[in-house]
Image 1 (cartoon, rainbow, N blue to C red):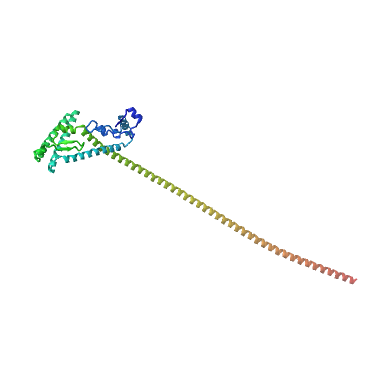
Image 2 (cartoon, helix red, strand yellow):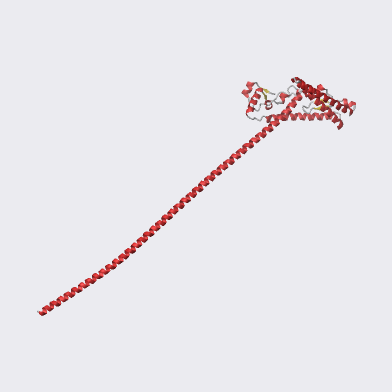
Length: 348
């Protein structure tokens, strides 16, 4: 049973995104609405139908993509699948109940059915155009109807000639591929116009066309979404590549700076080692100079000391010699003095 709420109640209790809300109704394609009042009236929908919620959805769908078409496609596909199963079942029943005919006669009968369908669609279109006030176009369509009627008359004549009179009078039925209703081979134009221009047949056409439209919309949206995902993925990959390049450049700059620092440290160490070597060599030269200087000083001092020692020894020897000589002279003097005194004393 359909949950029908007033506008105020629906806004207070549910939103259009609620699972209880019929998404096909929001997209204006629910079979319960379209086939209402026909001989295949489905009754009330089990989900919430509310025009206010539909208006809310139409406003929101302009701002963002809600993808309600997927729910509607599932709903309509399930409904159309049921209808197609009924059509196949009706065809099977007709094949069992109707008299068997040859393939040639069946093809002629099918030709009459096709012309009947074309006449019915043209008459329904002419009536619609007349109701809309397009009288000239309606007259053009009616002229086409007359042409098709002539073709139908010829097709019926061929079919009659291929069938016994008793069998020809038997009503041959056909199942409508759109709405699964039965169509008679000898239906008049009014009956055909009522069928093809009726709410049931047009409702099924609307549902089938809406289903194809929704499928195309879903496919287009999925392609756009896939393209958008692909674009975002390419942007992410491009950003990641840029980040990797940036990181690589940053690492390369760091490595370059590190190598530069290492080179600078090596240069400093080299300069420091060079200075240290120069200092060492300078110290060594100074040390050697001082050593040579001390050596020369010691040598000079040694020579001077040796010279002084020689002079001192010479002086000592000279002094000793002088002292010896003086002592000798003293002794000689005293000896002479004694001899002189002795001589004087002897003389005396």
